[in-house]
Length: 278
Image 1 (cartoon, one colour):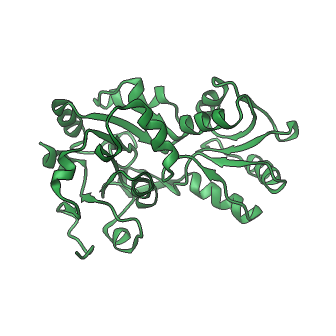
Image 2 (tube, rainbow, N blue to C red):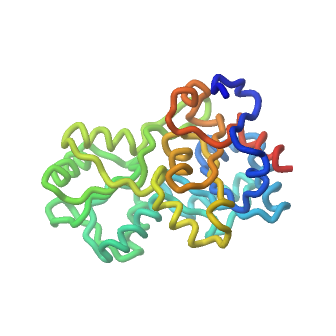
């Protein structure tokens, strides 16, 4: 089937029976549930539909600039019910991954105070460049300075293991605008050092494996819903779960026609997905 689709209508390559069988939805937030501080039309109704069906849902975001409590507060203010166990960030997933590799490690962190708190509460020592860090960790650092980037480049060039929370190039905002995200910072460091990080968040399987420890349904009954082909949909492929693209955030129909990451289902927004599940 051609991917030159009418984005005002749903599109899928799998049987709708597969969609109806989903017992747990992994939901992206930025560009999927909301844009900036504005709820995407139909998002609240979608969550209501899931709750009425008794279907589990977990908010899974690559945005590591905020911690779980911040996302819970934002969702609740927008009228979207969520409990602590239903929110996972790439920052938390990265801290959990690193805790398995090297508990209590010294970390040179490029991140917000909320991300720093995520690492500190798990026992990591946040240090400066001159304190011989064991790892460089790059998050969505909205407090970024040139000195932070310079120090990170020196450490990465010298061989310090380098991890990034996620690879998104842009964070979508209302009105069709974007702010540079961690992927742009990764590109800066790669241009200066020639080195790429180990990425924990979407599109990598690791973050799904962490999430699936919190649910009881089998992998074939899990689906990711998101607005990015190279993170959300690519993660669905890597983790062997159903993938659903919504065209309410970063990805466009043109992007879809050119991407190697093809979803199982495409909807203009979460509203149309809700209608199919009702």
